[in-house]
Length: 409
Ligand code: HEM
Image (cartoon, rainbow, N blue to C red; front, side, top):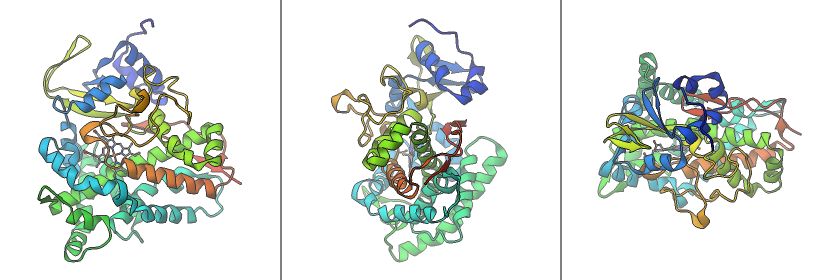
C-alpha cells in the first residue's frame, strides 16, 4: 500500500471526520499507527493489535483518566481501580451481571420493554430513539435495583444525563454532575438502610449483601456504583441499540433475515458492536516510557485507544465497513473478557473493551438489545425507515444514531 497524505491534528476535529471518521482512521492505521494529537495533547493508537495491547497491559497503561472524570463526579469506582482493589471489587459485583443471576432479571427487562412499547400508540412516523432506546437501559437498571420508577422516570434520566455531561472537564457541567450524584445519594441512602434491615429480591439487596474474600461494599461504594451503572450502562446501551436498528434499517437484507429468524439478532448485535460500537475511544495514563513504531511515548502522557478504528481494521476484518450477519472472520458468540484467542482464528470485536476492565454489563446490554429488538419486530410489522435515514453522529467519544424515524404496517 502506498503512503497517504500526512495526518494533521485539525483533521480529527473537521466536519468531514465527524461525519465519517473511517477515511481518516484508515490513513492513521496505515501511516500513523501512533499519532500525537496536538490539540488534545494525547497519543492515539488505531490498529486492532495496538488497541488490544493498551487494554491488556494495564501496568503500562493505567486507568488514571477515570480518576479525573467519573472519580470526580461520583467517587471512586471499579473503573479507576487497579491491582488487588480492582480484583476485589470486581469479584463482589461481577457475579450479579452474568449467567443465572443475570437471567433472574429477565422479567425486569421484559417489563421495561413492554411499558415503552405500550406508549407507542398509533404514532407514525415513530422515532425509535425518542420512544424506545433512550429510555430502555435506565428503566431496566432502575427496575433491577428495585427502585420504583413511577413518576420518577424523568428524574432518573436527568440524573444520568447530568452525571454524563459532568464527565467533561467544564466547571459548570462538573458542578451539575456532582449535584446530580448527590441527589442519587439522597435517594439511595434510605433504600440501602431498608435493604440492610430487610432483604428484597432486587439488585440493590444483592449489592448490599454481596461479599468476596471477606469484604463487602460500603454504603459510599454502593452509591458510587449505582451512579456508575446509570452512566456506564445508560448511554452506551441506548446508543448500541440505536446503532443496531440503524444498520437493520439501512441494510434491508439484514432486516429481512432477522425478521424471518429473530435468533439472528444476536449476530446482528455483535456485528453492530464491531462495525458501529457506540464507544469510540478509551483513555489511559502511560506509566513508563514506551516505544511505538520508533517513537517514544513518554511516561505521564495520555494514550487514547481507538475502538472505532480497531473494529474496522482491514488486516483483521475483511471488507470491514460491510454490515453482514454472516462474517467468517468475527466471533459471533459470547464475548471473552481476555479477547481470545477465539476458536477457528476468529477475532472478537473490541466494543466492550478487553482485559481487566472489560465491560461488566456486556450480557445485560446484549439481553436488552436482543429482547428489545425481538419485541420491536413483533410490534412493528414491515418496519422501514420513514424517509431518508439520518446519519450517525459523533459526539465526544460516542458515535450513534440520534433519531430513527420509522413507519410500519
Ligand atoms: C452496549 C452497551 C455497552 C458498551 C458499548 C459498553 C462499553 C464498555 C467499555 C468499552 C468498557 C471498558 C472501559 C475501559 O476499559 O476503559 C466498559 C466497562 C464497564 N461497563 Fe460497559 N458498556 C455497555 C453496557 C454496560 C452496562 C449495561 C453496564 C451495567 C449496568 C456496564 C457497566 C460497565 C462497568 C461497571 C464497567 C467497568 C468494569 C471495570 O472497570 O472492571 N456497561 N463498558
